[in-house]
Picture 1 (cartoon, rainbow, N blue to C red):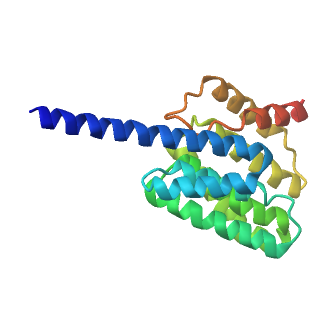
Picture 2 (tube, rainbow, N blue to C red):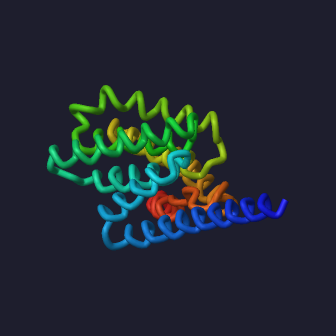
Length: 205
């Protein structure tokens, strides 16, 4: 009985230690993101290998590569970044299927290609982006990132076709309300987007 108690105590200690290492690693990666996004992405990737059942580390590694792709003019560099992001997103989706946060990130990855060259990628990728946001909305209609990014995509499409973007301002306003009440499901769960919503809403007014 005593042996069993010792084994159990050791197991719990190891579990807490592993959890602590994960938390420390994630916090360090978020801190690095501010100054060195490439290093932060690499660290998230290393955490992903150590946490094969956790979708969050590959999600953030993918997000860094996607965010850094907007405005990139070098096609070779853009292709490498987005290919890496796609691999990471595939890994995360294998762990967590029908996850609205991953659907939003996949839509943003396609949007990076459209932003780079709308003439080449708009026709093929625009329907995919619209479908991804529709699916994410079906799964999580009150997720603020789903509402915000779907509205911003609609605004971009409206601008491209010379249409009024005002009708979508109410959706951005709703997203901002949802951000105020959003409760992350787990530690390190995505919570970005509020500042972007405020910025778009300011432009609406």
